[in-house]
Image (cartoon, rainbow, N blue to C red; front, side):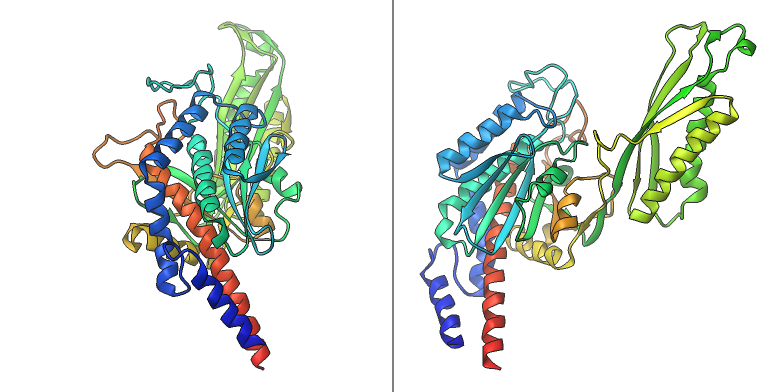
Length: 440
């Protein structure tokens, strides 16, 4: 019986479309390059460019992605891809494949940023003060491209691919709500991609283990006693107190943290006063803190509150600290699974050549993809888009941020390749284990 199971699996693979998949390791290695060829077809590329530009023109902030999710649903319907909506307020979760286990997930974020676009081009943001300045329009487009590729070869999938179009990555913790919605139960692994201007077109980057830091936000109100600026002895100056607080917060990393344990505390917001000659009653400061370990992160949180309240007291002020977890939940560190990282290197190497894989160093940036990795094995990576013949592109979160649309086929085919290969290899591994067990 065990031998028949194995022969059955081999026969099934042989019967699949020979232009895409064969049961040999050579056949598996050809999947990424063939998907890339399909994604580079003129009609396919033009379709993705059109999708990306429509999303870019109409940016929506976290949990407000009504029109974006409407576009996603419309495109999935055209493909014949089933989906659930709403998930996590404005999220969409699609399904391609057998509808049965095993399950693998692909994720794209959909939200924009509260930034006024300064790039002058035909498809500039039509919404004042909002912009896709982190490439989420490209991420959504690439996952739709992957959905189309996978649907075209659905009969070849050895399981089900779950397509996660996620809201509110930019501080809103949309991934946390996706996990809480339960749509990833029984999923074996999840993959995510992010565009980057730090790599050339056709390059990818990632690393095993800790990759991006855990992050949190804080704001504090420091209250004193207002008065005339010429008579400071009759006032209690909250601006001076806040200034001392900010300086003291910098000592948390430089004097208290292990130099080999990367941490960051940055005060990026300072609001107070409305006149040149009036000491205000209070000021508000706010910022972010980052760390690569949960222990260091929680220690920073504790010390931030202590420093703010006690340093304010030294200056005869009162202070309250809010870590605004409801609005901006703490993001855990992004930690890539060891086995999935090797799998990613194999797939991307087959598509682009192993020489186009770049081992990245840990970054203090954060990603709510980490919520998925707390629930199931996950892998996050970056896809390059810098054209070597072009001047250096602006960094994410800049009003001058641009996307090189030539990267869209790379992201779409990489998504599709990882899902297809993962299901095939998982199925083969399961049957092989069953065969060996039955032999005993």
